[in-house]
Image (cartoon, rainbow, N blue to C red; front, side):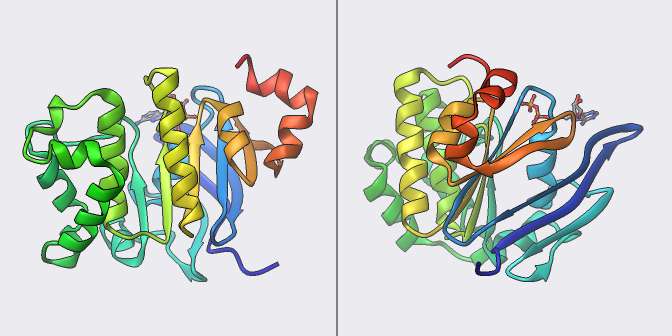
Length: 237
Ligand code: ATP
């Protein structure tokens, strides 16, 4: 097995006295799609926020391309190719779609017109409305914008926190299609989802979290095929 592009060992995250993440370990092979699933409050967002440098872990070790990034801040990680699409999209509603995309390229110190043009080719709905405030987009379109903004940074690893949250089933299909395309283009994807079955169907490898710990992990297809896991952790479709 080749060295993973991302490796997380014994990660711990605390909020004051609340231990939200209690020794989580996982890894992602280059070009793979890995998903962290689990109920509300299991610690998924805390894990991904610690990996992306948005949160300072209380313990553990995170390596990206073989280098320790445990305490590297988010802005430095973006430059190195590790980018997060945040939960709730966090687009800037009053700025135009174009300006939101430009923000994805701030770390280059200039515009990234080439990669922005590539995003317009990929997401024509954004191209048509590039001069409109991002707040004018529907929820699904805003999710596409959040994904496109992250892709402008040309990441090697893309972390996604609940991209399907609050979206209608048809739009969820579209979001998953885009995620699978991103993976197919060679970008490693770490996907956090409450929509566990859906995420596992798209993923190569899955980790099931419960109260801050990994309780099951393995090839995504194996997790889906295990009725006990499906019943205990994955709920209804
Ligand atoms: P969700 O799907 O609701 O985002 P999650 O699996 O991503 O859930 P986290 O958001 O990481 O879980 O939360 C894990 C635990 O940490 C929960 O008990 C939560 O209440 C707690 N927690 C999260 N953020 C904070 C915070 N800023 N301050 C205090 N406790 C927090």
